[in-house]
Length: 168
View 1 (cartoon, rainbow, N blue to C red):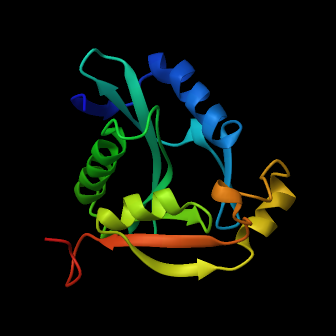
View 2: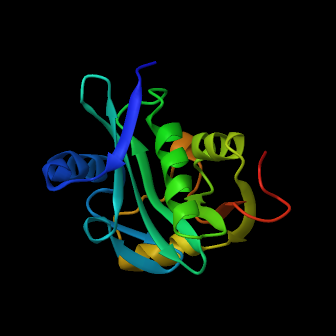
């Protein structure tokens, strides 16, 4: 696994971010928890490998006492970028005084559920039909997700950064 460094995105990252978001989300817009976000308008962290190559990105927002991970994607699975980006996002959250790190994924995304739970995030809510509602805003959202699992629901995961449930 390559050594990964995380830094805030700079204007020179625009093309790499645009390509990653096109591959992952079909463009710069995501619809999650009944809200539409333009990933170009939110703060981003960028992962680069030891050669300086773009390895992934995390887009976030601070709201409601927490840091929401709006988008997290690596250029290749298993390169360490996702873990490094999540750790950097936690540092941003802590510096901002946020008490939790949270995100939403979909019911079909078993790989993401495994990844996030192994890093201490817990499922705290399920929103049945949230993806069905999102299709009204973004019709390109597929009906079948990973492993041909019907795509309908959002799952909210979070890790407390303060208080009794803080991961050791």
